[in-house]
Figure 1: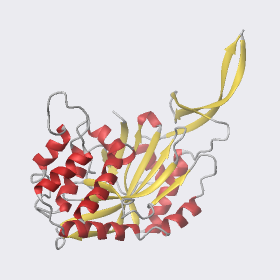
Figure 2 (figure 1 turned 30 degrees about the horizontal axis):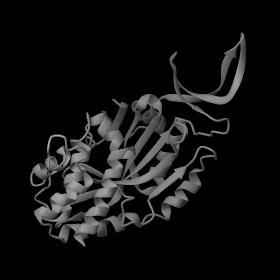
Figure 3 (figure 1 turned 180 degrees about the horizontal axis):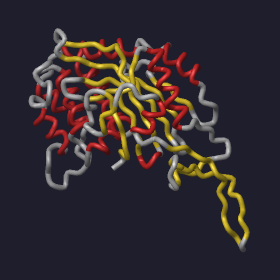
Figure 4 (figure 1 turned 60 degrees about the vertical axis):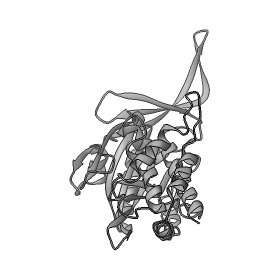
Length: 313
C-alpha cells in the first residue's frame, strides 16, 4: 500500500482514503494531520574498509519524525541535491491557496515519506449537458524525496459524477499546466507562482476538448477498436480476441457512473477509460491513487484523450 496516511477537508475525495479534518487548520496542523510531521536530513554516506570509514561522496536522505525516535532511510543523493522541508512545502501551498482563490482539500504521505502531496480545489471549472456533468479544477503539489524526481505543481481535474481524475496537462497538445523544480536549484515560490499564472488558459483548452468529444457520435465498432488500441492483447496463448481490460471497458461502457451523460459519444468512451483507471484497474485504492497521479494511470489517460480526439475527428 503506497498511501501511508492522508487527511481531507469537506467531502470524501475520489479515492475514498484518509480522515476528515477541519478547514480551519494551519499549514503546520495540516502537515501533522496528514502524517507529514517530519523533517528530512541529508547525511554523508560511508563504506568501511580495513576498519576505516571512507566517504562515498553520496548522501543519505533520512526521514526523522518530530517528537519520536524514528529515522527512516529514503534514498541516496548527490552532494548538490537541494530540497525544501515538508513544512516549507505546506507553507508555500497554503500561501498559494490564499492568493489564488483555491482552498486546500487533501494532503498525504506516499511510500514511507518518499512523496508528500497536497491538492487544492479551485473556484474555476466547467460543466456539460446543461450543468449535469460538472468538472472541477484542482491543483496538485508534489514534494518528492527521491533521486531523479522533481517537485511538481500541476493542474488536475475531477469529473464529479464518477470521481474520475484527469490532468489538466491533457489539453490538445498544448504546453502542460505543470511546473517542475529540480533538486539542483533552490525552490523559488515566487518563480513558481509566476509560471503557473502564465498557464491559466489550460483549463479552457480542456473544456474545448471535452465539449468536442461530447458532441461526436461513436459507433460501437470504433469504440471497441479504441479500447483495443489502448489495451492491446499482449499474449494470445489462449486464443483470445482482445485483452481482459478491453473486454471490461466494453462491459462498463453503458453502466459506468454518468454513462447517460453523452451516451453514444466519444465522451462516454473516453470516460470509461478514466473511470476504469481510477476505480477498477490495479490491486487496491492505494496503488490506483499513486498510478493516477504519477504512474501508468496518468499516462494512460493522456493517451486516451489524445486517441479519442483523433478518432472522433
